[in-house]
Image (tube, rainbow, N blue to C red):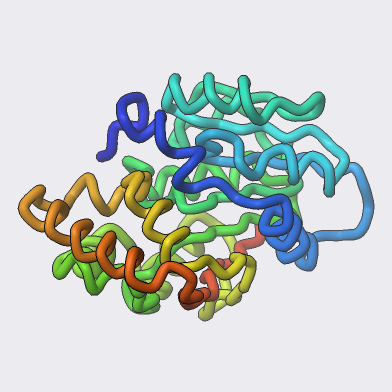
Amino acid sequence: MVDYDGRLSSVYAAGRGMSPGEVQRWTAAIAAYLPEERPLTFLDLGSGTGRLAPGLAEVFQGPVYGVEPSDRMREIAAETAAHPSVTYLKGGAENIPLPEASVDGVLMFLSFHHYRDQQKALTEVYRVLKPGGVAFLRSQFSDQMPDLFWYAYFPSAREVDAAMYRSVAEAATMARAAGLLAADDPVWVSTENPRTLRESYQRVSLRALSTFEHLPQEEIDPGFERFAADAERDPDRLMPVYPAAMLVLRRPTTR
């Protein structure tokens, strides 16, 4: 488990923030699987510093509940990502503080691997979704790992990341066990803006990725030295943009 009340909370917004364009592209990708009627009620499960909750409120024109267990991350969200239709709530994925059948959509954005009991969490997602409601599981998957360019600087990073995540089949099987309908394959979404090598180094060097909480310091320090040297030599080189995997899960309209 990763402590998001400590150092990570202080760097998360800078190291994991999204541009307005990226938020817009994510909400558009989500809207493609929902009815056109408005308003729709949303749950952002593991909402962190609130990087997506206000965008969900704007697009779906209904209340958004950001449920986040970290007190400090929730405080930052309330300070920096406030919106009249967004409420940030203390809670965990295994015990969502919302009534049954109360939301049209659930977003789990890079939070699933942090849930203490993933099966119970998916059962809770089923519970709070209205019949016909849709959940969006945006995660890395152990069998669909992107070959991130910065893995080259940290030899064990890819293995560490893969160990955090379920495979697509495992996640889909767990979702079905919770009563949700799940496709066999994820949807691939391209939303990130290209970044230069210098921008990438500056972002990754904040260590806002939980990967670095599991790497040995003797690997981190020389890795960032090499990364910094390359960014100094070739600062304006554009780095690859990786499509993101998302499983779309639906609560059936009837049991």
